[in-house]
Length: 552
Image 1 (cartoon, rainbow, N blue to C red):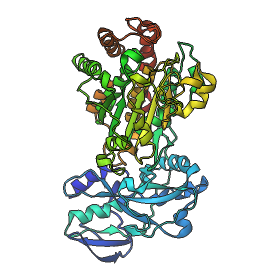
Image 2 (cartoon, rainbow, N blue to C red):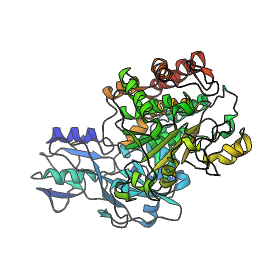
Image 3 (spheres, rainbow, N blue to C red):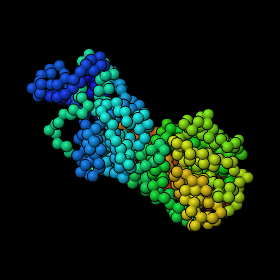
Image 4 (cartoon, rainbow, N blue to C red):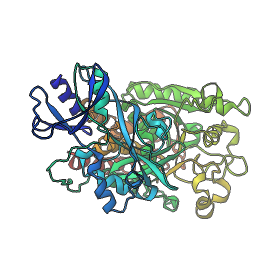
């Protein structure tokens, strides 16, 4: 069993770190065949336990002093309480050891969550950084007032529930394995070592914390290095080769926050432009680039398009599979407005708001509904008669917990740009007429909408190759990203060859460039070579490939 336990502890490094046969815990519980048989007090350091091997588990008590030094309130110490909760998160099973993760919860003021994460990250032997920040239900915890061990810690106004892995997970593992005899520490009874509490040096892996959802409440973590790289991507795609003035609509970290949200997603639905013949060659290439990366990450992806564009978009998807741009086909569906609850029934099983089919909606270069109810292109032409009311999905999603919306655009008339509509009306050509009135949770602006799609794919790659973010996604219970997945992600990045193939397919299908109407290898009147091709290599490629220096 010792061999299995060693491997189990290695698969959950936040819980167990090293073993020694010198001194047992002073107070311990004695499980036999999975049931507690009582509390045992050892005879002190001289006690002889010749047939036992002792594993010492890191404790969150090891970082509390550093939190207090940084000014982070220690509610559990103030209240003299410490609650521990069984979660629905499974640890990686090894042999007979198989159990759910147990966590502690510490209420932390919202403006100090990043501080708490950075400080605890430096103490990996004391469980390290948080494994979850936000709604306890996302861990399978139904009621914070009823911990499985200990007493509940009360939150103050403005506090956020922050969860760390807990050494009591070992108790659950031992109970479930039903050994003939084992001893574990009693919750709250700690072993004080003479090992100096020396934190790790700060590095590019230090976590940054971002709020990505209000309902349910959810924060995410990413390393300083990954955050810096994604901000570089945001700067690259914000360039304005068409001189539209798009930089005026820029909102810092919309790309970063939207991709953090997407990394937590399960099922994503993409809203294609209303018809490629309307939007031109901008939109579909970016949508396919995002879909390719999400599929590589194991997400379910669905495309929504207008009824009149089904055949053309189906041919485009088939061509993308044939040319190797997509590794598998993507379901293509339409939305029909059959009444006031049509959007609700489309988004949720049986129209039940608690049972969403999708957790993310992404629109790219899709004309959005203006304040007067019409749809306009950037030249001010009304195209309402050519557009299905797919905006209703965004409108309905705004009232549905657990569904995040993302809009990508390059002018302000696109679906989701209602988030920045006042800037569009004041600063963009024809803005007072064409501005989309429907807001997304996140509005990504780019010099060309396709570029926003490429940046999303690259940012997801950076997040999934970031150890800090991966640890948070896996709740600290799974091994790092496998080499096979890394290779798959690398080949799923957008490239000059793949995007040139998509653009060639659009041209063969008769789709013309926006702005000029040319049936040519250009997007928004800008030639693919060199304007668009140079975006990939060296610029996007350089940002993505340099991640190796940060995370090796």
